[in-house]
Image (cartoon, one colour):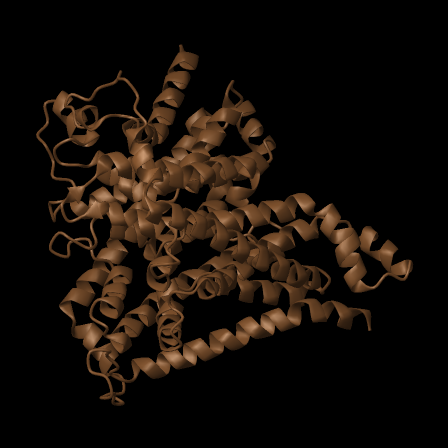
Length: 269
Length: 290
């Protein structure tokens, strides 16, 4: 009896978590008539009409490509820089490492508003508001501190003996970094990369301010479906599904690391 | 010699970030002491602390500040209470635990803009699911996002939906790392389950919960996406938080100095929370008690 109550509670919980998502995805394959029927239609003929409209929309496709380009490039840069810095920090004594870790952590706390306004005016004066490299640089700047703090936790797990053994063999630091640390921490590095992609893909505020017509990312582009004539829920739900689906897949790939990464990396709750 | 080589790996990066943050902080402080507005180009003057005084006397700004505090406190507390309850419920062996955990992750990795759209869709006054479910219970339609009394709480529901699972997953991880012995000892001594929970488990979780609460509070202060997509601060400014007001001041009114003043105040808030976080997290680690 208690067991039954427990499973009912679990089912209620999972429905509460998944229902809004389910409803959006289901609406995206409904006809307009079915989508707005009250009482809601639970069984219906699926249609791909909304997806056709979204995928024939050049602006959306362009935003998709922008999102892929910007999030992957920025993440690669962040992880490359972050890995070097994390390698250096792990080799330091405890007090030095702690104080640097604290500093890195504090970089991630500031509200984006405070550095985005100066960046915007700098970019506006240099006529760079519609430039991919500006937004990539800003995202790399935001992600490096995150990459450092998360990668430190992975590099810490590498036994000191591995390092010391390579030292004895006369290896230089760069060789140890490249031939020992990178291969051993490969899983952690890939997870960090995926998390950086995830954050960048999902980020809205910076993109809203710093992207122009040619550099718009998906979260910004999707707001264009909210027109003055009202919200076109059909295409909008289809677009929303296409935006979040890749991130759900990536999120599942790095399940264990997501929460670790989001809880500020260096704080083990 | 060997220490010096490893220093080269991180010092340039740290130095770069240090220099950039110092330059930005000084530059922003300097700008907040002027009255720069893109609508009045070429007429900037040094006005001292006037922007800060203006914010103190600005009803719209103070209301936004109050809303930010309200949103942060209520959302964090609710997320913590529901999250802790769910974590305690799930903290046992059962079939499908792995799947339950994976499903908990879904809202966390969802694009916040899509979360906002999803809830705007659910809260649609005529065809939304929320009002349909209420009508099944013979409760009147609620204008979720159109009623100034309700809108802030509707946005809060979206935030709670997205971030409670985060609290659940972090709390579950802490629960699993607790040694089981004290609980079992208490049970052997004849303590009831709720007594074990109240006197043994919760005190042991105390610090972990505070850390989660601070992380959530810092993020809530900075919440932007769901407000932008669900209400844009409306109706009648009833959901305008400080972050949103700063954005509007900068990019709608082009009142740069004032927008940066708001951003400074926000930064001070988050830094206070950060100091608390350091004390909790790093001191705990130094003592070896995590």
